[in-house]
Length: 77
Picture 1 (cartoon, one colour):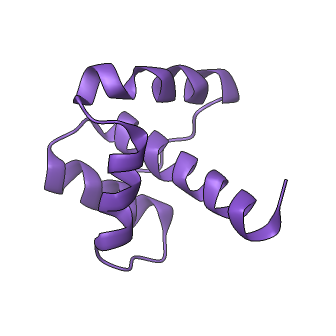
Picture 2: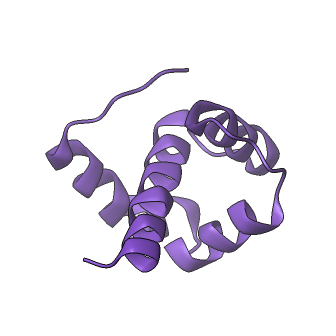
């Protein structure tokens, strides 16, 4: 599943995730942190979509946003 979203599409998907999934991003980030230690983005997104029954586009957006925020935490803005 190698989905690449434009920045505008990514922003739109992220904004809709709480309404579509019923869970805030922080909850999805917790699932990623407690889930299997996959190295590749698509593996994590596939796991998230399969394990929690969400659309692959949203799963990819969640993983991408998680990685963006994690980099910011580790290396600063």
